[in-house]
Image 1 (tube, protein in one colour):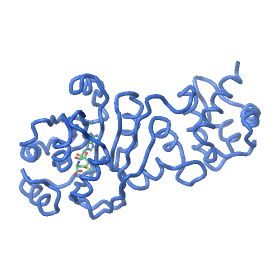
Image 2 (cartoon, helix red, strand yellow; image 1 turned 90 degrees about the vertical axis):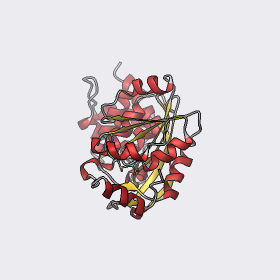
Image 3 (cartoon, helix red, strand yellow; image 1 turned 135 degrees about the vertical axis):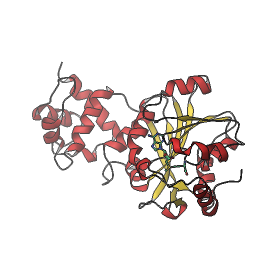
Image 4 (cartoon, protein in one colour; image 1 turned 90 degrees about the horizontal axis):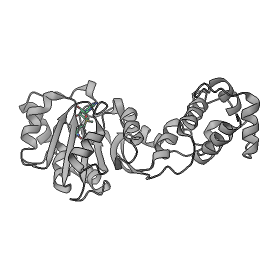
Length: 291
Ligand code: SAM
């Protein structure tokens, strides 16, 4: 089967099967060979690797992944694409398609069954309506994935890579940076997709940490982070003394101010100024202040 990476072939395949891109599944099919090759290259795939592709669509990137990897397991929610993939992947003997929702997929079973329980590499042009839940599900499943290389909305990529002090910095940046080191490897304009999305896109490469870069009680620290950014314009002392709750614990303003001072921070500091290191330190300080 010829490659799908031109608008002409993609249009012909869609017309042949009477398929219209479904908005509710975030379907924007890639039609640019340079971008697809760029994604596969950024994912550093070898014949030793088993790749999990989320949302193969009509198989555009799958064809390239099949050539680069030892094995490819795809998870696709839209069963109307069955006949299309049967044709476009007919020469790809190392590809298996699981027809299900990635948010309900048993990821341990996938790695056990297809890769002897070893870490997988994830590659995807993600459906934008569920980017964050998919990424967090993958990242929180520690040790299951070696790397995650995904197309996302550019604005989301910027938020994920942002550092303290910038306006994009927030709970999502900290959550992703706790589990992995993120990097934007490609910027992608709407013209590379069919249909064209309304937003700019970017390819993110996340290299998963074997061990998180900071030490903290995860549940406690992420409750602090959420409360800090829920009320972005408030000082930490204000936000945390009103919005924090974890395992029945709440915080007083004095407790928060004392913890900030002990860490060399001013009592009126805002959450957006604190690095992951500082949130971890604050978390250790406040957890112990209750003893
Ligand atoms: N990989 C193809 C490409 O690059 O041309 C299609 C990418 S399209 C942006 C997103 C794909 O994810 C669609 O095929 C869509 O049906 C699928 N999808 C959407 N939600 C999903 C979910 N919850 N689980 C699995 N696949 C999903």
